[in-house]
Image 1 (cartoon, rainbow, N blue to C red):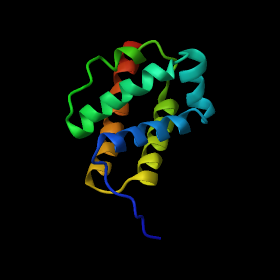
Image 2 (image 1 turned 90 degrees about the horizontal axis):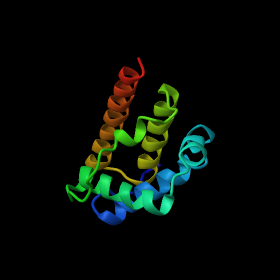
Image 3 (image 1 turned 30 degrees about the vertical axis):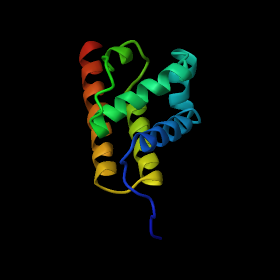
Image 4 (image 1 turned 135 degrees about the vertical axis):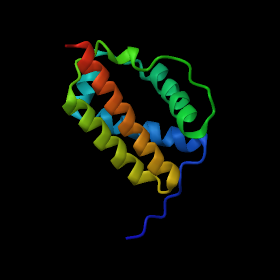
Length: 125
């Protein structure tokens, strides 16, 4: 079956990517607990921050300012959380997009997960 999706090229695409990803995260018991029960994320504030983060990484918009790692230090997350996050992220990208930017975005997500996981493991030693 041919995928008629296009690559990630606009801020509108980033909004679709972020919204559809977090919709899936919120349906996943392992990840939903961290976001909704433990962290009690304010989604109205969090989603625009994620749009800025990914617009900066993907489109070079430079609208994100912050330290994303710091927000993760106190979370009860382990390797299975990162594995699930990456799995959902990649599936979501594949569901909506195709092309070099989409592939690069999946690589960036894997890199972020790897670095965060390694840093957290080092902090918790």
